[in-house]
Length: 261
Image 1 (cartoon, helix red, strand yellow):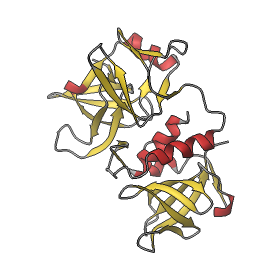
Image 2 (cartoon, helix red, strand yellow; image 1 turned 90 degrees about the horizontal axis):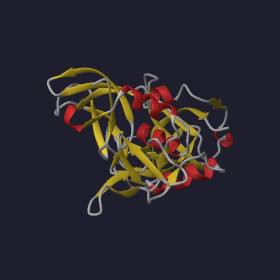
Image 3 (cartoon, helix red, strand yellow; image 1 turned 90 degrees about the vertical axis):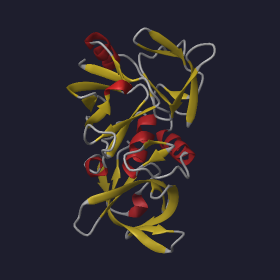
Image 4 (cartoon, one colour; image 1 turned 135 degrees about the vertical axis):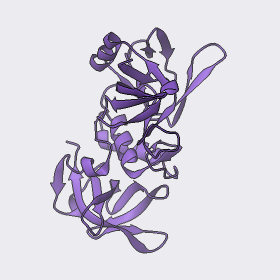
């Protein structure tokens, strides 16, 4: 087995080949990956979407052939945009997928996608082509995650971390970001002032050693949507994030970046 895809709603991606190991990320439904190594029921994989590596339980992997893997790479793909969608599998069974899931081998005129020999009808909302107003689209869907709980390594509305949140919102809008904040900060163009920011721009925050430790999405002037304890809205200025509940600064501003055109 050299290639795989997620046929489940969410697959935990772990640091080591063990169920007790730290979850570093998640593979959402329809996301495909390379399989490098097998070890006692575990697979070491690399995500095709963002190059992220980790270990997954082999029982959770849907194998795909070399031919299908490369077909998925080259074929059009859609992305689910409802917080939760139910995709019919049979007349009596549905499959649950979350926002940001991939719909491979997309058939735009039929609203269908396929994995191996299985063809699925997508009844929920999706994004196939880039939205006309990307910034409005991103903010609209970012607000849908409001109050989603924080989860280290999470990429879903049932649990999400700060960089998982920004990556998924950008994915839903048709823009690829790296998985971690320390890598996302290398993208785009730096802004000189907070006042220059527009909805959808990213703000990055560091610790006392200068390490990037947090990221969020600018909503409107001096407001940021970010995952800290939960997906929430706080004030932001040149000093950092001002938590509206504690009335204190929670994160120190490092840089603001414009990824969108």
